[in-house]
Amino acid sequence: MRIASNQYHATMNTALQTANAGLTRVMQQMASGERVMVSSDDTIATVRLARLTREEAALEQYRANVGALKTRLSANEAKLDSVKEDLTAMRDLLVWAADGANTAEDMKAMAGSLESLRDSLFFSFNSRNAEGKYLFSGTATDVATLTDTGGLPGSRYTQDPAVNTGTQDVAVGDGVAVAANIALKPLALDAFLNQLDDTADRLKNGSYTTATVSSMLVQVDKVLDDVAAQISVLGGRQNVIATLDDNHGAISLANRQAMIDLGQLDYAEAAVRLNGYTLAVQATQKAYAKVSSLSLFNVL
Image: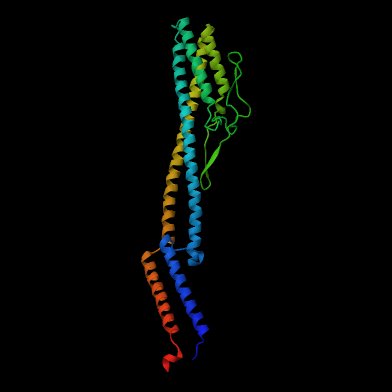
């Protein structure tokens, strides 16, 4: 059987290219540590890796949301803790004011302290975040929770109708959202501050009665209880997202391990293939060189 020179050269070139291609591929795999370089390497593993990659990206976003949510909830809790402290101090003053043995000067001093606490509460209720958004206005974050009109005592504080009880939900899991804000509208803060303002004014000018102080004390207790309940709500939310974050971390770890198992190169097996392709290239080159040096004169 005769083999034309052109056919022989083409066959040898094809063999060399195939061996070199295999050698190049296995070297790329060993350099990257990845077994699946293209989809054709392992179609099933490719599909699984794509799914795991998408899930991992979603988990990373959820965990980023959880981190941001923790900061917002902590800020809200810190503000409400400050409000709680002011309300507690206010209650102590009102209990003291209910004592009939106080002098007019004592009552004026208490009125001054109540006014300071009133102003502190006003600023706390109108707290804003780093972006200038109001914390306690519901979804109307560009609207002040309370407004000081500068009017007469007992009627100077108002609340914009846009302030609402809407929640700013943040996605922290697949189908799971947690509110990032606390809406204080149900507490009727404008009415509360107006009554406090009127009480302080009456204590200052001596027109107060025992009923005035008792009524204010009842309202302080009510708001104090409501604020404490809101702090508990914030604590509950933080516990929920902490648990979710732990779960996300565990799932992410499992996903990364699965991605390693599916896509990581077995270096022992790759070394065997590398050796095989290297030998194939060397053998092909030697055979090509040997046969190419032959001619009909060698058999004469």
